[in-house]
Image (cartoon, rainbow, N blue to C red; front, top):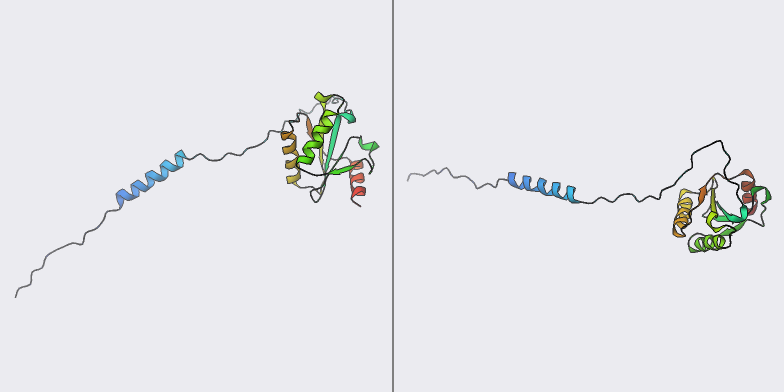
Length: 161
């Protein structure tokens, strides 16, 4: 018997339209996605001038010294009058917020009350951010981030002993 040979092809699925659809979906989701933006707190720095700044009344300020091991100390004296008995330890969070509010309410000039933040070499960046967060939470408008004086470093190290 004669054999019939038929030229039959296997059915095949063309994936080209599926690839096009995939790229269209990827493009759609990329363009419609909202990327999270960094939320940063603005830090305003004064212009450098040769004129001396306003005189600071230390009863109208709160100086925060950021130390090692997440420790924080405060005082309300000038660096030359500072001793270990005047340097008091506190903690971050609501305790610091209450301290800032209490000292601002008992300040001589409440509108000019200033918080001076002085991180030591042993403190970390997280401590500074935590203090700046508390400044923002308490709506403290005047604050300064500055270097610690040698006398304050000396008193701080004596306090740690």
